[in-house]
Length: 440
Image (cartoon, rainbow, N blue to C red; front, side, top):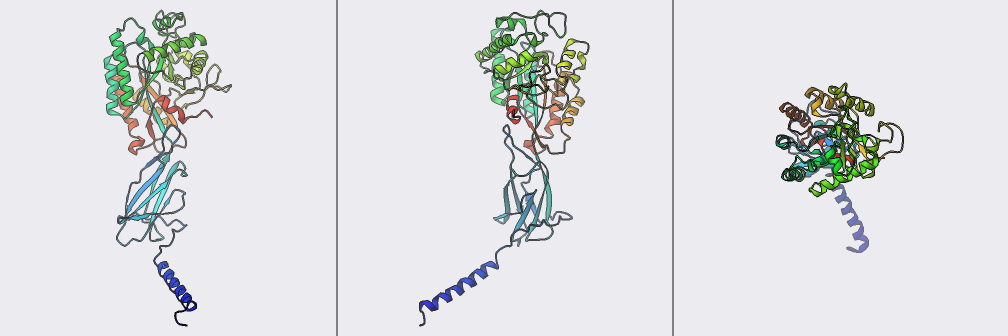
């Protein structure tokens, strides 16, 4: 019967079949599994935007640049664009407003110089080929060692100028004797403390602890002052040059507690990172720091660079205690042996970050850039994080030449900044670095 159900069903199936066939004729084929051949030269008719040169691999201390976002402007009539990113499977770009866009995760892309190639409409030859760097961070840290109770306004102003010219964060290792030295007036103490707080709050600088065992501080803490274990003189009645490990673990507990209380009372917060005066961190001091929950120390010295102290106990002490530390030494968790860097167990919880860049007092600009280059060749992506710690002593004797060396070194380092897409360099503070080197 015309129009009956048995007659209508085959007719509908035929219409559906014809519709599917018609749609299929307009569906773009999938991306080819085989990479197209690289072009002799990139086709100028296609413009690629958004591709960075450096994508940082993240870690617990640093968010990674783990997403690639690019847009391709293609000639009129282009149906589809495919991309081959590193070892990832080929990906079809999404058409939008006459362009083609790709957003893809790089978390599975390994460190290295990674290729990226583009082809249009299933072509056997790509219209463009490029590459990008997938790299772990190169952490550069700037520190100041406050050897004296009042560093003076010239040095403080210079630190402010460093922030003007460079996107740095500074770890200021501050001496507690600012708050116990009778030569520093209460008004000046308040001004120095206010300056430190402003640097912390404005520039995210860090306030760490630096102890030269000056007698005015040691006695204020209720500890007998040692004067006969100087690393420079036969005796030192000021306590300034006394090796810090002349004090027992229990005495260091007292000194650390008193320093933290002084910082807290002056609005600086309680410090969690440390550097020993004269780099004289021995076993007793290290254990005391670990007991008190300090998360990181930077006393391990690239001792060969302080040749100016040859003939003095300071040079010998550092050579013997930091014998393993050199230009390329990297963070580690110390042991309880005499060098704090041997193979004995158990491990301390506190991360040791070598002062491999020393202090600007002892190195020329050529030496500093050489240390920078010895840790990274300036080209190759890093497979794991590395660090460079450098610094200077803010004081009334901080010379224009030293100031210029710091500025010039930072200008050299700035040429490789990750946030400018120039390399893997990231400026950080000591405590912010610590999660990048987990204990296990």
